[in-house]
Structure formats: structure tokens, C-alpha cells
Image (cartoon, rainbow, N blue to C red; front, side, top):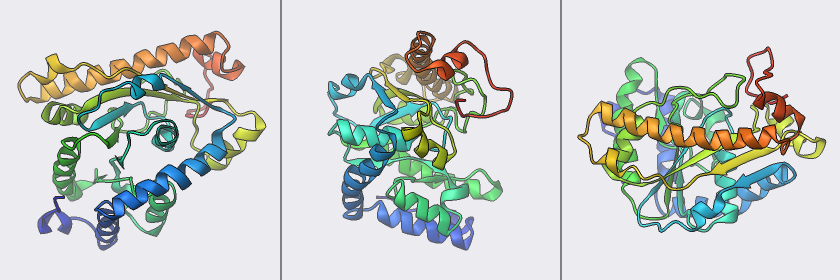
Length: 293
């Protein structure tokens, strides 16, 4: 397991360095295996308790039937802070292939202080790692995060990395709109050739109490659509170049969008209730929100 250089650590604030060192340690063995067991038991238990009435899943057989010989990247749209919490909990509950789970995240919250560390522990069991920084000189640290992701994506079966190709949260009220894919995920795929599986997520909002209460008050269903493993061989065989990375990233988002169109078809057919059907018909709320009405 590689470590950052002293120069890379030096660009972070003291709080960020402390938060990174704690999380970095928790993602080493034997800690990583221990926290994975907590994710599969405690984490799945409380997320399942809060969503069992409204959780809907499609395409899980695609994952169950995969012949896994390498690490897996899950590529998903990004509309809620809780996208990958829901996805990972359901995969832990209904499949057996995850042994080590990682979600690269922006360092602005999870690595700023005690609150971010607490959320990473109680909701992610330290899997919000490695951090990516967008602010000024802190971007130097991302050289390490990139090396670490290359290392993770080169591991064998059992390692799963969750990735949002859009790079940031889409705040459009249209659940079937997407931001442009960023080339970072394409660079990882081109360099390491992992299994790549698209996921479309809908029905989650960013108000945690409201989201939890919706499980008992008739909130909109959470829909997780898992696609087939992507065949990206023709693209990954191309020369390592930013154009290749962008083409791979675009291909992953097209696959996510196709799953989104299947969700839209189901919503129009009334399978998820009238609020979801209104959104599918384009009857969008006036306020900018990621929540379904």
C-alpha cells in the first residue's frame, strides 16, 4: 500500500492531514477487513431498516453472473449525497463478491474535521477514500490519490471502487439529465482494465431525516438499476491520451443514461407512483432540487 510523499502531505492543513492519516490507517489491513465486516452487518442493517419499504432493485443478476478476475469499478450518476451508501448496502446484502470497498470523495467535508470523520465512520466505515481536493495548492495531493486509485483498480476480484464520472453532484431537477463525464475514470479504466459496471440511481434526496421518514410515510421509491459489464476493449486498446480517457468516460455515462431511460419508461408506466411519473413526463418542480416531490 503506497503512501503520499511529504511534499504531497504538506499542502494539506493540519486537520486535513490528521483526517487523512486516520482514514489511511483504517484502509490498511487488518483494519480494512474488520470494517468490511461491519459494513456487511451493521451498515447493511441500518440502511435496510431505513429503506426496506421503498427500495427497488433491477439487474442484480448481471453482477451475480459476472466472472470476476479483476477489480470492479461501479460507475453511477450523482444526484444525492447518499447514492453509493444505498448501492453498497444493497450489494453487500444481495451479493457476496465485495471484500474491499472504496469511494473516492472530495476532501472538502470528509477530511476537514471531526464531523467528516464521524460521518465516514458511521455511514461509510472509512470507505470514503482516497480524498480528492479541488482547492488551489491542495490539488498537488491528488497526485497521490491518483496513484492510490491505480493501485486499487489493479487489485484482484473482491476490490470494488465506486466512481461518479460526472465529477460533481448534478443539481438539475430532471432526474434523467447528466453532467459531462470527466476523463479521470477513463484514465483509470485505460490503465488498469478493471471490470466496469454501470449503475443508475433515482429516488434519493439529500435530506436524511426526510429520506428515512419516507420509508414509513410513503416516500418515493429508491430505484437502483445495475447494467451488464461494459465491453470497453476497443477503447482501452487505444493510445493513452486524454481523448481516449474522455471517450471511455463518455461510454460509461452513455451506459448509465441507457439505464436511466429504462427507469423513465417504468416511471411513465406508473410503476413508481405519480410523482415519479410527473418527473418522467418533464413536469419538473420550479425550484432547483434533487428531490422528487
